[in-house]
Image (cartoon, rainbow, N blue to C red):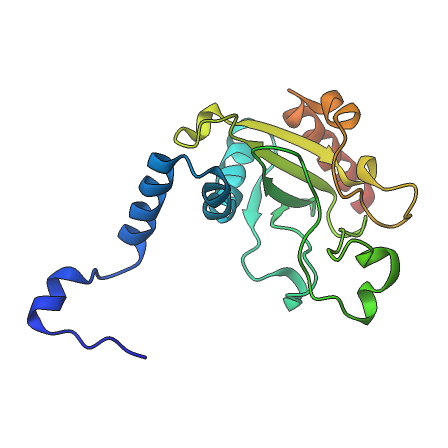
Length: 194
C-alpha cells in the first residue's frame, strides 16, 4: 500500500525513516523500555563495536552487511577483521544469552533445537563480543565491551554447539580484557594464514 501525499501531508510525513527511528528511541528512553531499546540498538551495536574495535585495538574490522554466505537461516558473524577473524556482535543488558531464533530445519534437528531456539555452532564465529550498556542507553562510551572466544563457550553436553547462556564463571574471566582477547585471536588468525 502506498501513501499518497497531499500538500498537507507532505509536511507531516518525513522524507526518510531516520527521524522516526530517533523519535521511537527517545520514547523508549522516556518510558525506560529496556527490552525494546535492546532490540532497537542491536543493529546499531554492530557499528558501535566496529568503531570501538578499530579505535581501541590493532585490528581493522568491517561490518558484514551482506549476511555472510547469503544464508539467512545461519547466523554467522557480524564483523570481519582484515585477517579473517569472525566476530559475532551482541547487545545485552542482562544475561548473556546466545540462543537465536532461526528456522528449525533438517540441519537444526536434535541438540541444535532442544529448547525451540537454535544455539550457535562453535564454528560460526571466532569470538563473541558483547556490549553491556549497564543501564545507560544514551552514552555508548559508558557501555562495557566484553570479548569471549567461541571455543570458551562450547557446551560440553552438546559438542559442536555453544552454551545457551554465558555463565558468570566464564564471563568474569574476560571482564576488562576485550582488547587483549581480540588481539590474541587476531594473531592466531595471522599464524593460521602463514
